[in-house]
Length: 112
Length: 114
Image: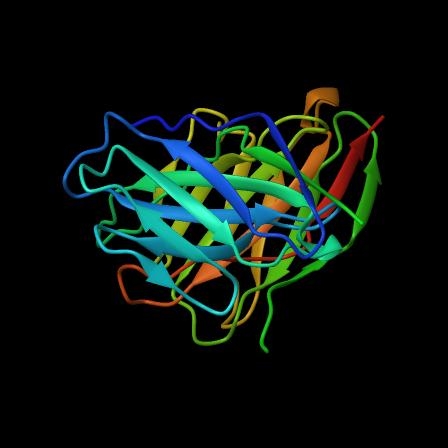
C-alpha cells in the first residue's frame, strides 16, 4: 500500500481555518485520496475524497497538489466539535470492495 | 440520516468463550466491513464482505474469526474462543455499491476479555 505521512498533532483556535497536511510521495496514478476523522469514543466518519482536482463539500475542502504527492484538508472555521483524529488514506478501489487502511492520523486540538 | 448500528455497545466475556458482535448496516448498502481498534492504537482492517462472501481479509482475521449475514439486515462477527488480546473496540462499516462510495461506520462494540 502507498503510505501517507501526517503530523502527529496540530492545534487550532476556534473559528479559525485549519490546514491539515498529508504527504503521499509514492501515490500511484489510480489511488484516490480519502480523509476520515474519528471523534472521541466514536467510529470513523467520512470527510471528503478526491483524485486530482480540488474538492469541496459541506464539511471541508481538499486541496491536492499538482503532482499529487501531497494534499491538504481544509476546515474553514474550526469548531470545538472538530476536535478529532484526522486520517489521510490512499486506496485503489476494486469491484470486489476495498480495505481502507488507517494510519495514526493527526490529532487536532481546538481551543476556545 | 440512516446509520450503522451495533449491539451491544459493551460486551464482557471470559477468555475462551465465544462472542458474537452484531451490526445492522445501512439498508441499501452492499459492502460490509469489520475493523477493530485496540485502546490507544490505530484502526485495523479485519474483513470485507460482498455478495455473501468474504472479499478481503487481513492477517488478524484468522480461523478464530468468522462473519455472517444471516438475513437481509444483520451482519455479525463471531470470535470462537476469545483471547485477552481480542479486547478492543470493534467497528462495523458499510457502503453503497458504486465504486467510490465512502464507508459509513457504526459507533462500535467495546469487547473486554477477562
